[in-house]
Image (cartoon, rainbow, N blue to C red; front, side, top):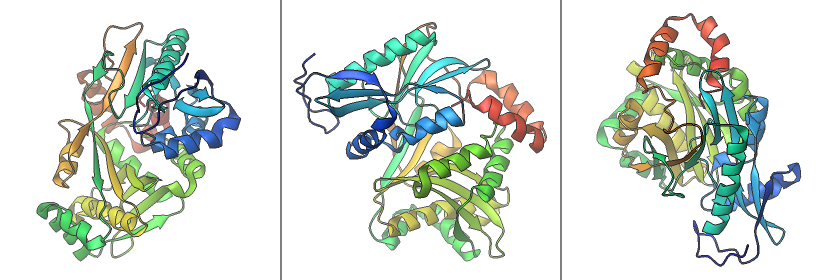
Length: 358
């Protein structure tokens, strides 16, 4: 099939015929280079996630490559999530807030979507889910639950402090005054303790420590743990962030209850922004939030404006878009019960449950 289409996501249209085929190990470097160079590419499109999906979660992956004249012109990462508790889906991509295809033009995207639909239907999944940052298939069923928050990092450190709205800036100053400081850890140990304590308080299962260790191993310096410690050196809050191009994405966070009185959370994100600014980053990606949640309000209070995310679906063996999220009333009882279980129990059981919650 020949394509003579307009530009798509800032990339040039493809004139030669396009073929879609499964990913091969030898594609890794070319795939990652294509994703990094394309304006629609994100950290979650990098091939390192394929290792994470297969090795940590045991999810079968199906990464699709669109080729034209021997060069990659589009990619679409997919993983099959099949669990007793949360059903059977093909998603781009579980545990990732952004996904879908990265394609040179609309025709390439269409070819990748067609191949994805065929693959997902063939697995017996109830649905296909594409976590797009922009609408790709306006006629597909969609979910408008999520937004993302992204904002420019100014080149001058102090200018970034001034850009924080007054109330949150006062919180950052409170943390500085309390003698808080940030440290970068080479291991995930201190971060995991903070994270596991936090998710248990919220009543949701924790991801495994091995998952975080694998993120660090697979992505190296592009995955970083920042820990906030008191004047005495005790850890109170932490964030695991991803670096991609000139962007920083705080992705997983945790704290102890003592963090609140010290304003350690606001201080933590300021420290991340300050360090990112010093290393030349230009964009702070505060990440996904559900409308009507505390994290949504927190990010707005930092002066970030929400941008809708376009999660689009093909439904095969169901007539409604899935709702695997904590706001769904059917999970509320599970959350209340989980909160009451001992930490040792939840840390052991959590990874088995959570693999279906991506």
